[in-house]
Length: 493
View 1: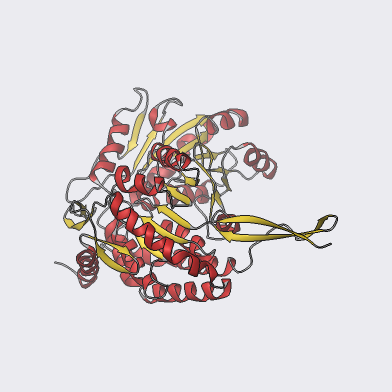
View 2: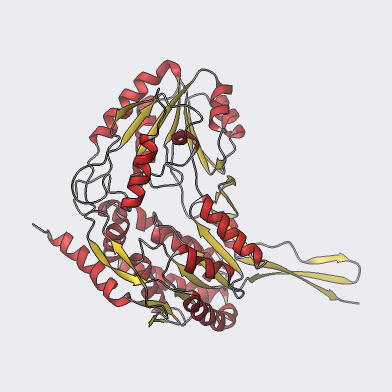
């Protein structure tokens, strides 16, 4: 039997799917795409078809970029205070549509509805309001007379038209992290959402379009190799902001470099979680379980690669197993679900293939298999005794999987933690203040948590070291990514 909540959520998705079928959001309205090809979108909880979106071509990207370019000078001329006021109106409208947007995001991306409604979208709202306000007072070097007879004035200016490419694991959150700082600083935007999760971004576009001038924000649907590539290469795009895998990020970065434009790349992660023998184990286990299973582990900062002091490893594994096996895996509209489906059959099969290729000496403590029934469900998994050089350890898993390694000394823990090409996030659990200071100083990751994991907010920066990215998202530094500094020198003699 379908509940009222399930009916409302599926109806909300059906309505937006119908409105955007075969169209892109360009110049303030849904307009038919030049391409007649389409991409089918599926419900991760059931495998059922949700609808189709346009498989846009370079011509569709041209139309969206042209609209954004026409709108940009007038939008840049709007005062920061007025841009802030308009963006705050968008945030209020989003808050008024919070239930509907949460329903669409949950069904589309495969996330438990209550988690989206209670945790994720309130954070997104906070981000909208932060960016809207923070752009009113951007920093710059002080103006002054640095040369005799010459006054120097520093100006922060928008870059122009920004291309955004968002991932399927956080459709709205990542859209806001790119769109709002870009708009707040006077840029216009053309955004391409992931192929499997178009609908919450589409609804967001409608809301933005009700409050901002036509052409300021545009959305083009399509594939990465065609639509994303055309957006990254477009000569009228001033910068590209991309979140996704390292492999795709390389292609985006290369395409942007070919046009001598800026690329902001937030790429994959493989976060080490170091648990010392003096850690307060119960709260540590709680934080690690949440950090590894949030969004079904489809999180670039997930607490998936765990390094535990040998003296406590069995107690740690027992505690983690007990917590993992209490989780309820199921469809996103079931109020009892705590771990939803994988986003797609492809992603589920990719994770299962990694588990299958595990080293001979490793052991599955729990999980390790798909769950029979509708949707793309995968049992939360713990794999112990893994080797430091096997794929499960060296590469991002992006699923509800924990690997457990042991160490004996602090130096060994640091070597294992830093033994990766990724540098996005890490965490350390210890009650020793001196050790926590030494370890966090030595970890080569852009974000390090001490006695916690997966905690962030819009006013805190996210930066990837190593192969995990270039540039910064969120916070004041994230706003500055979408600006250029102009130095004006005035002869005052």
